[in-house]
Image (cartoon, rainbow, N blue to C red):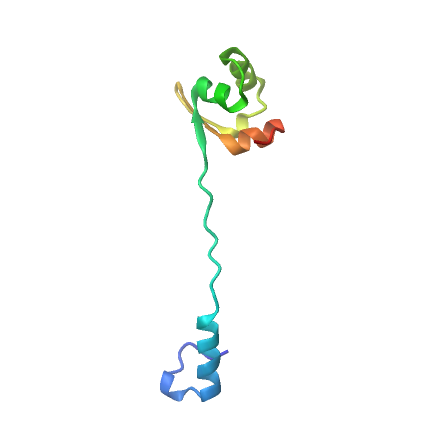
Length: 90
């Protein structure tokens, strides 16, 4: 590997070709997955396909506490995390 401080005019042909090969290789870019959120008791009910009463029971049980962000009365639930905490797959 060539030192980054080396001027281009001081590179050998082999070093220059090595750099060109590295530049032509496809770069793998890992894109972060967008998190899907559901909101409120209604969102929990839709996520688990259950009634609002059962959704409230799920929330109160503490099983999905790590997936819940609550500020006052506003509730946001990370859907994938909630499903994995309960053991359901979608």
